[in-house]
Image (cartoon, rainbow, N blue to C red; front, side, top):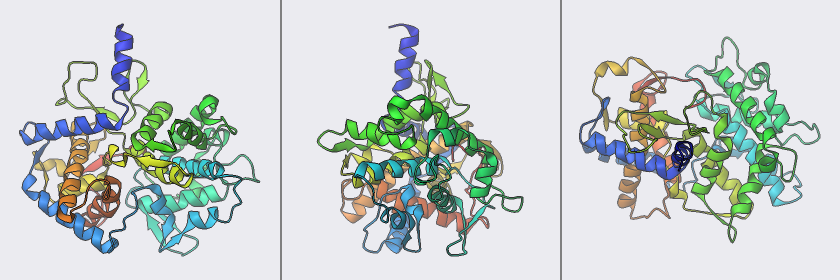
Length: 414
């Protein structure tokens, strides 16, 4: 095998959930040997983490009927399911048509879902309520979608067309997300660039995204539906398809063998004997999107299997839980006050440890409840769950509810 082919093969080995989980647990094992440069691990605090996640889940879902962690949760406000209200009034020609629209909405909304910063709020026209962070971004992007902001056809507002996305302007996104000098949003230009890259890529791959329609992100539904065997599709296959087809969109990232690696970073502790030495794949937004595509596929009649084949999400609420509760401790206490680049070894280490520790929380929670991974998958634990517990601790410890680690974000990772 040539060097180029070897590197391409090595790169492809990182574009899946298994690689994320395996390397995250390697990072944890190194940390348990006290050989990581940035964090010490205190497993004696894990019981506290499990207790808090259990309490948080029971408060939100007393019957323990927990939905999946996905973008669809952010389209519900005080029991008002806004997407369902819209979608149920439409006379869809078939289930695939609705699924394409839901793929369009989920993909665009997730691409806009990096951290908003502590100051930004979406003032919801329906309730008059100011809503920040991910929930606000969710409702704002849904309102834009429902108004046809991403559609090329005024008669069909509920779609996202490649040509519109490729030419989306900063002014349009400012207007849709209500951004102003008094309502600043972190990473606005990064989000617009991401939408444009999405549009350009989708337009260039009409065979993937336009088999039943003009090129649109929702065309990926048909691609995945074709892979289902006996109307069944494993969840990791959703992620693999997203990483293969949408990987080139992510800016300023590592490449190997000509393959864009997406949310994948360097860390000195992860040495291997091949071209992937030192690389830690995380694929946070892609996995968040994979979780968010499960329900549209299910609505279309496709059964999703191996949901726990996806990993926990390496983002600041889940990661903040472990820092704030004391499972993770800084080697250098001053790091709590410094700003850190996303590519720094500290942030990469923190995110990798978060993925592995989420699996440990899941194991502990299932043991407490006498449940298995089928009845209580990680997707429900994240929702119940770890993300909410991380936010709770952040609100208790910091006036602006910011994460315990200051990350310099460009609007495309967190």
